[in-house]
Image 1: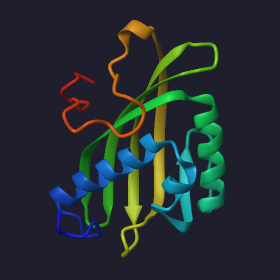
Image 2: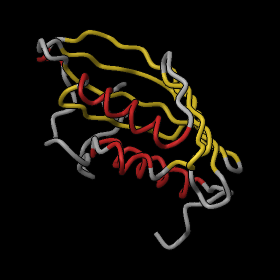
Image 3: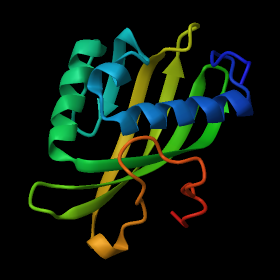
Length: 154
């Protein structure tokens, strides 16, 4: 892609921005992920409202200590100007081996440099059996040939 991933977004750049976010989160590296956000980024994530990269790193560190073998897929829902909406699903298990699929939607707002300044996430967890998992790639980036949410019927 030769087009910069900054607003105003086109369909192509919004899809690419969603995939970059997915790739970052699948790294499960809080420091790496935090760099995609402005230093004073505002979030709503479940019942937490972190402000700034330091609090984002703290939230993600707690998250990935609890949500083990985390694998995520994001899919573009809508975009306009400097805003993107995605839907997502991720699978994980707790330290007792109970599996979950978490579903949600995120609304994103970006600054002129393409850093996310606001993120509003709504997330629901559904217990699943291990044999009902759909995300089986090795930990890390989802392979390009792995189906997305729509192809998986999610």
